[in-house]
Image (tube, rainbow, N blue to C red):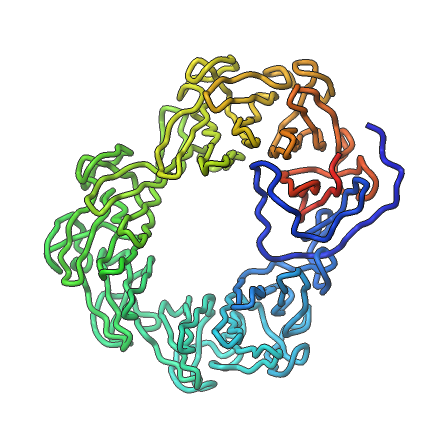
Amino acid sequence: MKPLNHGIIVWFSVFAGALMLGSCGDGGEDVFPTPPVTPILEEFAGHVGGGPGSADGTGTEASFSYPRGVATDNAANVYVADSSNNTIRKITPAGVVTTLAGTAGVAGTADGTGAAASFNYPQGVATDSAGNVYVADSLNGTIRKITPEGVVTTLAGTAEVAGSSDGVGAAASFNFPSGVAADSVGNVYVADSNNNTIRKITPAGVVTTLAGTAGVAGSADGTGASASFHSPRGVATDNAGNVYVADYYNHTIRKITPAGVVTTLAGMAVVIGSADGIGVVASFNSPQGVATDSAGNVYVADTINHTIRKITPAGVVSTLAGTAGVAGSADGVGAGASFNFPLSVATDSAGNVYVLDVIFNQRIGGTGGAIIRKITPAGEVSTLAGLAMVIGSVPPIGLATDNAGNLYVADVFDHTILKITPEGVVSTLAGTAGVAGSADGVGAAASFLQPRGVATDSADNVYVWDNYTIRRITPAGVVTTLAGTPGVQGSSDGTGAAASFSFASGLATDSNNNIYVADTGNYLIRKITPAGVVTTVVGTLGIAGFVPGDLPGVLKPGDVSLSGRTMYITAGNGIARVTNVP
């Protein structure tokens, strides 16, 4: 199509909040200012064609340099540890970015207000109910506090003095603190990484070591520093403020009271096994994940045993699901189910347990990935959702929802489209697992070849990018090829098979059921009408980069989403926007 000869509007504003690129329908109303009436390509968030920076401003006017930690306050402001800039940034809900404290490019240790303060590679941030911000100032080895007015003080530690001393304020020392959290009464907890300890700081700056001894690996129970751990991994808390730790190399589950009293809740140090029982009679094999429920039960991802264990508050250990030493992915009840190196666990208010379970599938040439399993309180295991991926590579895998809350998944290496109901019931909408092809048909009679992007329209049709084509699947599972020819790569506009595409990485639909395709390999955004008519709406064939202004413009698209008549496109290191989409 011809470029539109209208004025250029380019926004350079960073909104470093949470932009979710959805792919269902038109996404509702546009929450941003009313766009101009002509189609314009513009930068929206981050820097599509640029690198790191330190500018304040609204939207893409702002820039960051390798930010690490983020936190929010009760007013929905976002705080960012802008690590390489040595600053703490604040972003309002409207996307206005300011530097709350520190000066970009200036590493230092100074307390002060705003730019008068300095940091040295801050990583962790947290907030309290009063709007104060706490910072793990990693290379300085200190914990800093910033008031809402930007006044910075050193809460604990002495800059550039590495150590493990407890004490008040500067008398305490840390060794590369990287994570912080605050509780409801203003205590701050610190992951003191190189000391292998958990530290607690009161609002008055009194630092204590809640658990562990700096530099000492071991398995001793005791209070505070007299206890020891060996590569603790997962942590969880209960309603009483107790902390539970998966002590990986000790093969035990530890409990820490708010007073820092450490006990071994279950298992015996360095004894590997799978026995159920009470306390030390039970055994584990390299547990990693822990979670608690409202009754104080603890759930454990017993990784090498391929099981999920349950520990009562009295320390009674049972195997909730799976069989020790039996790896697999079978659903079932209790021992009738199987897991494969479960890594983490979580619980909900109804007492269900969710498990992140690793899979490895030799059948598909050495593919692997992760599935989400659900375990009821009765031990009934079902697979809530699962995806396959190539080890060492993570291809784009499509996800989309319909109006009823069903989830559709492009299961790339099984060559199928899956449907998952809100209740977690998984079925194959179209295709046959392990059968690659390009046949149209109904359900299992259709075939796909590594389908990627997925989107749905208002009629709950599902659209899939598949082997240089766009396929359409009705709610009844009837598959047709809407545009393109299987195996034929190109860039032609046209109707149906006369059109051609390169590698597409994202799909979206609008309220009129038009489909927009991020044709990444051609550096284009393509539009397909319900009748299969394909046109190019954004981008210049074969030219990567970013040139904003009148369409067609220049960009290399990643994913694409629509909000009303505004299109958002991931590109480079940011988000591009097209207003009044044609």
